[in-house]
Image (cartoon, rainbow, N blue to C red; front, side, top):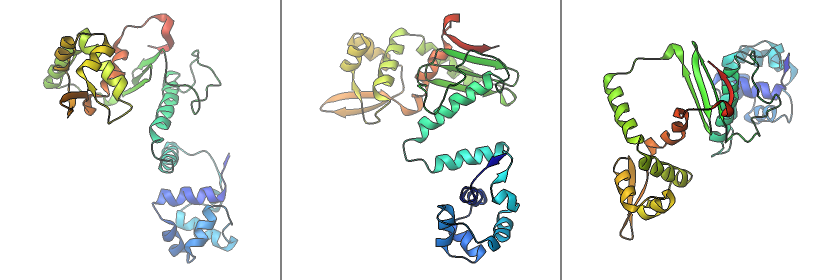
Length: 266
């Protein structure tokens, strides 16, 4: 059994219903301050109000009091949504990534039913998750892979056939990405500008970082989707935002050796 405090239950049930504290107060004939005090655990609702509160949220009094079995997927999803709603700005992405890392492990181990060489005490809420060798699972249900800081999921039953126009566009993209000079420029631009949306690089700066000649960089830049700006008579570059998801995905295409595999299910 999972036990939750009544203030946590009221917050959870109110949000599940899409109600504000004012909505709850009006429905129960109490003040907004009363509902606020309940949710902040400053006090509990009067015992005579419990049936009305339970009826409002369409639960039993036992459920309202927090005595309930663990919820299903819908409730878990709602709890996650509520958790992210209350996070400070700029923290959501890292937390979402950490949850994705855990979900990847769950999928690869078939819900922890398969043995794979992960640390049993790994804590994804605090673990250093940015670097990873390779772990993947390819099953009828779908596939998931993780390498470096990239995690991918694909649901098998949701797979759709690609249009010929999509395949042509993919072929052209892969042709460009097969050029070593283009790849060097991509990774320099991604590595040095992805953390700062205001940062652009000159052709000379890219050449120095990529250990290429300026002419090689100029030729590579012609192959890439870029955002440009002029500053002090110089042209500056960064990868176009809609293309910036590509660099982290590319290592997934590299051949792997048994030494770098964390867990594989094929």
